[in-house]
Image (cartoon, helix red, strand yellow):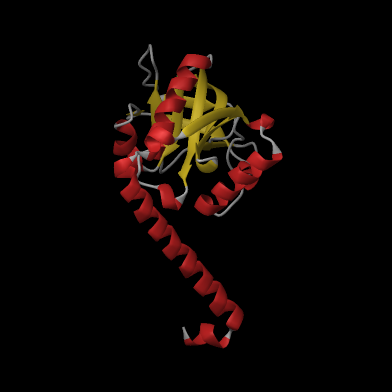
Length: 217
């Protein structure tokens, strides 16, 4: 701390980060209190839009949310992960507070062609977490991809610590598989460390070999 005080710019930047963090905590407590009276998820307006159709204002809101959660913009996110086709935007009082994106992809399951809706990027602003918002967006997007998109199943990857959370939302963890995809250099890579979650309405999929025609999401 003494070193920071000797550098006013660093000290003020550190102080600003602490104030922002404290405000987020206070706002979250406020939202959790009011949530018992009038649940936020019941007031949430969810719009699912083509990514290419976003206007400038919407793109700014999306990038603001990505920076708050991932410390990068969505465009920067594209450099490593697949670009989304659709975005589910969750609004409260015209403020964007949550996002989930949808990627349309093709894959081979044990050599058989499959159309996928890859979902990911489920993020909520810190002040609005643990209020049921993410779960509400997750369920709405699930309904949308199976009712409106010509797909065989949904698929996404996640950290192993999140498997039980997504299982409660109706997704299943693949237990025996090898998943390959194209990395940023267009070379074939094998997925490691992450869990693969899958969901389908009419058929049970449990492939041993998954080959994604493109980057992951």
